[in-house]
Image 1 (tube, helix red, strand yellow):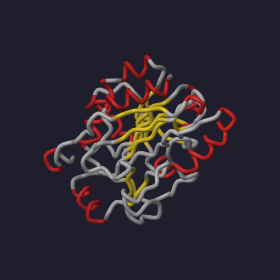
Image 2: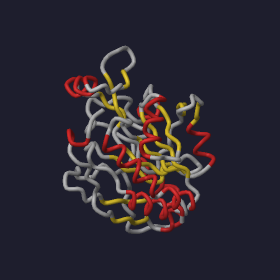
Image 3: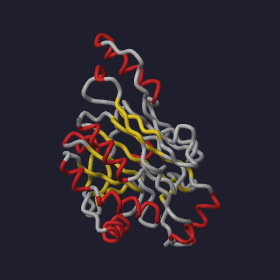
Length: 262
């Protein structure tokens, strides 16, 4: 187990500013978040379109296609060499399908699950990560508000079933945790990256069961991420940051969920 003292304290970005694009893009509004974290990249790891200065109803369809194409790749890269090099899917892209496992071994198809309710989708590193546990616990605090808005919450990691149970018990979680041990979903969303050899050695020496890359060529992890996915499977909001200590604050997730639900 990696203790918080060994890695430093979790830093949450300050309150973010949220805005929606022009109404003529339709009710499925795109969101923009300006991450003010000190050590964030120029884009803050956020993939959202800016509102066009002029918007005409007759151009709605073309604008949506153009914005989605400029902002997010149509197909995510399966494995990045580093976390910073990952190319996550962004707003307007179709959320990929994947088959994951619940703690009890039951299979869960993402596409079918997305179709049931709007989804708050979290990608995290595992039960051994103190920053992930802090983030999962903070999400649990706003769960009642998210459920009242009609959302379901899914949190995905490469953890084993045992790791899922540990996270749920430690953080007193009621929402669903899913195992992506083969990194099927993480790769499809463009979040999978190769863990540096020295880092992998350090983690495994502490008993962390990292997910092996197929063929035995090292290990991989997902870049932590927050997505809002509509019932039609389209990504409404996306936030990622390769800096593992920086996570989107629960208040910002709730604000984004409220804006997307309008």
